[in-house]
Image (cartoon, rainbow, N blue to C red):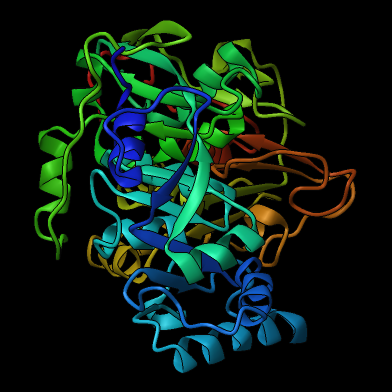
Length: 424
């Protein structure tokens, strides 16, 4: 029986000739990651073991959720990471000026490569599947054990095959595609399965769109998402990789629970209504929905092409009266590139605030917490009750183009000319 792309990676890291869905294996890890919320717990458990980390180059610590520190507790959490990184000589410790949103930063630094097996104490670690890696989120105690042993037990996931065809139209990005898919299969439609993307349409998706899609696999209940390693992937990693990597391909006779074909040319700007990511509607199905705040950024949509799309719409216009707009770049390099391209000026002149790289408002942490009754339209990944603040606030999810257009209009709307055939 053939193996899926994910199963091949897990088999290689377990030292096995083959694996099958449901099999329990112990796989060696290429990277173990934690942040300022999850790593302090992992570090406390790790220190009970009385050992050193398995490899100083294969542990990454990125304080990004409540940073720059918003209060004493968040400062103390960051201090735990700082001390641990110093004591154990962790090479990949990134803070403030060196730091960014973890799932934007690690691929940019070349710390995740095709064929890797990666775990992170953050559910959106599945982002790295865009590079053809197996990556998944774990709990803090699993992270502690992984830092000690350099391996972890997994139940091999089954898979759903998503065959992408066609090319997306103007203003349509990976976020629209993934919201469409989640709306189609629901938030538990891929429960503990690998979402494996293939088909001719993959080539029309830039790497930033692939990161956005892989990022939200967890919102479909998936164990991971994964894209094939193609020319765009190789171009992305060629100047970043500092070690060898391997591209894996699914076998022709690989077993999938189901196969779903998505015609990218038919995807419309899509918005997820409160309070679940699968509560989706296309822009032509939305009536008058006023908003109080717009957030553009996060590990889902804080990359340079996301900022370019939003700036292209906001350039020369003004944010609607009464609407607050926060733009968060994913990393310092993205921040600098946005500055060099004049995007920051576009946002600020339009009436937006341009932030340092941070998760901040995505989890209701800081810099954009919602009051009772307020509504936010956000390019983040979750819209659960109270996600961005008060339990009686509401969060709508969308891509950067819809977010920018809505910021100008003061209500949820489509970008002008979205129905035109040509792409951005």
